[in-house]
Structures are given as C-alpha cells and as structure tokens.
Image (cartoon, rainbow, N blue to C red; front, side, top):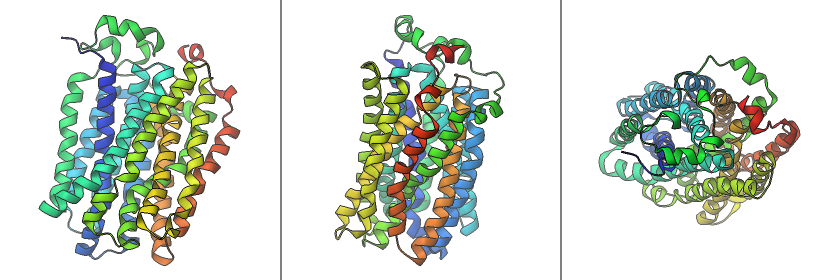
Length: 424
C-alpha cells in the first residue's frame, strides 16, 4: 500500500513531535507555583532547575546533530524522543529540589535531538525552495505545544494533580514514536512512497548517498570551523533566550505581576503561541514564495529574518501597559517575530552544508541557543527577584535587531554555496 502526499504527512509528524517536545518542557512553567509552594522554592531556586535543563540541553545539542548524522534520521529521532518522553514521565516522581533538577537535566539531554533530526528530515524530503516551509511547519509545533501546555497542563493539574500531568505528556511521545518507526525512511528506501510521487521531486533533493541510515563519519571539526556554522551559533546564542523567556517565565509573570490564577493562565497564555504558530508557517511560505519569484536563497532567508526582527522592540513596552491584555498583545510580537526569524534561520544549515553535515551544523547552532538560554534564565531569576521584569523585556526586544545586523555582516550572500556545489 502506498500513502499519497507522504512527505507532507511526514512534515505533520515532525510538527507533532515538536509540539510534544514543547508540551513536555512547558509543563513545568505552568505548574511552577504549585511545585514551588510544595517544596518551598523562590524565583531564584526555580531558575536553578531551568539552568539544569539548559546545561544538559547545551551539552547534548552539540552532540545530538552528530548522533543523528551517524544513526540516520529514523533511528536518531527515535532515540531522542524515547529518551525525553521517559524523562518527562520521571517528573512525576520528584520529591524535592534536587530530584526536580535531576529530572530537568535528563529532559534537557533528550529534547535537543528534535531539531537536528527534524531539519535533516526536511533536507531529505524537500527541495531548497520548500525547505523553509518544512522547517516552519515543524517549528509551528513548538507554538502549538507551548499553547497546549497552558491549557492541558492546567486542566490536568486542577483535576488530577501536577504529577499525573507529567505522566500524560510523556506517554504521548511514546505513542508518536511507534508511528514514526512504522512510517519513516528516506525517500529512496520508503516502502510507503509511490514511484510516481518520488519521481516528482527526486531531482531536487539530496542524493541517496547523503540520506543513508548510517552516515559516514562526520568531521565535526570541519563543520564548526566554517563561518556559516559559528555565525549561526552566535545568532541563536542571542535570540533563542528570548523565546525561552516567554515559555518559562510568561506564566510566572502573569501570576505575579498581573494577578492571574492557574485557571486564568490556562485560559489566556495560549494567545502568544497562536501568533507564533502563524508566524512559523508564514515565514517558511513567504521564503519559498520569494525564491519561486527569482530571489536568491540567502536574500529571501535574510529578508524574512529582518522583518521578524522588526516586530521584537514592541515587547519592550509590555510591563508598562496598564491592562494585562495589552501586555499579552505585546508578547505576541515576540512570538510572531521570532517565528518569522526562526523558520528561516533554522533552514540556513540546509543551504550551507551537505546532507551528511546538516544535522551536525544544526546541532552546533542549537548549542549556542541553549548556552544563551541557560545564562539568560539564570540572570532572569536574579533580575526578577531583585528588580522587576522591565529589564528582561527590554533585552527581549533588542536581541533580534542586533543579531540580524550580525548575520548580514558575518554571512554575506557570497558565502552561500550553490545547489551544485553542495551536491559535490
């Protein structure tokens, strides 16, 4: 039996995996006040558990891309989602500060593999003109997962307790894993893909020797030494912490500064993530549209990143608005602008590197974002406890405009190889 439109179904699978990823990581933010009350933690103590997550996240992000390139997309993704789903379920066994930090550390070891694996899958199944849309589709899952975490986790916690909520979110990932193992293989090996459909895009994707399940040994030193790789590392170091602030601190902000209870958080905190989901799809689609109209690939990618960066300064005013809905509206500018930015920034590894190096390059760039997130969350806990949220929103509004200038400077269009050069 053949499955029609298989690559779009697989894009939907990547979307769901990313949604599960963010559902698992965002669960703690929703129930943080419950856990803090039970264990007697303050904001600074809470930030330490986030640091444990980001420390592991940074360590494994660098290695996850290499592991995915070595194991292949199917086995690599299966390993990581299985690992982080079990780690999510272990949160239900937390008994204190250090066991919470330990569970977060294990979750941080598993979750980063989602991105290099998903990026590598997009590279295997989509031509350059559609890759940003593919990346946008799976990244939209992060908005949906974060949105659902506010609704689902709040409901489960209110009715069954926060421990049961962690068990449920982890179990969803294991269900996804079973379907993935059945459906996924690269196009030339996939028994569900018809020859007619494969013939329609075969000449525009990575050749079969670059998508074999167990790749050749990747020279990671060669990848990280290239200007494209460390430019992406720097760009994500400065900008990934912005979206992490929204994920891990928005529920805290709404409860502490705007007087929301847990039910109100579940009712309203999803709105910024809905804007983010639209931004991810729109950013990827617009990039492809510009390329189809004759724009060079780097120009199309960076133009959409520039537009996304232009939305970010609105967030600076969030703490000064008199009404909570206005602050939430300003936060929507963060999620929408960052989505336009990310759907194109995370596609650039597929433009710069060969298929056997894409996962490694994506992993190293994500490591930069994880290190930035770890340092930023540690600083956020201190600033919020001793001052206010205003300096944090200020930094959130400025990082993307500064980073796009960095990208234009360090990664000019001439640094992007042609498709024929990547194939060699």
